[in-house]
Amino acid sequence: MKHKIDLFIFDLDGTLIDSTRDIANAVNHTLAHLGEPELPEAVISDNVGEGVLELLRGCLVENHRDRVDEAVAVFRSYYGEHLLESTRLMPGVRAALKHFAGKPMAVLTNKPERYILPILEGLGVAAHFGIAIGGDGQVVPKPAAAPVHEIVRRFGANPRGTLMVGDSPVDIQTGRLGGVLTCAFTGGFRPREELRAAGPDFMVDRMVQLRDLFR
Image 1: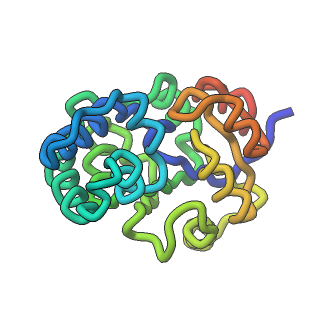
Image 2: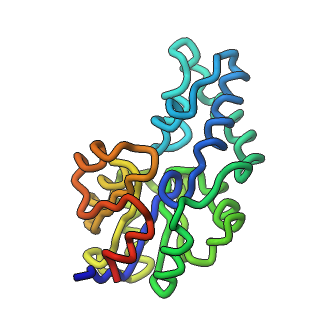
């Protein structure tokens, strides 16, 4: 039996979009600016999910941690000019969004808000989302419950009919703290075992599987 969902809340990086290479290029550009060696994409991806500040803190060597503000400025300048060089929708996302086109949808990410709409518009899916909240547009970023509560309130939705979909334990924790259902997507930045340990209500390996679970 399919579960009735009245509101979908999606994470962005690793869930709706594969932004791995563009983020990695921006991080490595920043590291080069600071005189540090480049890092593999996999190492950089392990630090994605909690915002630009935490991303760069995780990628900088210890003796450059006092240059985080400078690193953030360099990253934001470069990344803002290279948002869509390699970034694509995750496989099955377009079909899933089309299937649920009659449902309210929102994006909730720790990515800065200035990047969200240009990416969604560039990939042709912006019209699906009535609300898009970024890390710098939240009172407190994920995993805090406040942005989930705000989205639910603005749509006038029932929390138990709301689903948070994301590819990281942070997304699952955010949904649980916000009192909504949670669905882990295993095709993003985090391994299946880590996501399972976070205790999601549902798990999918492909985004099109949302059609099989929810109505």
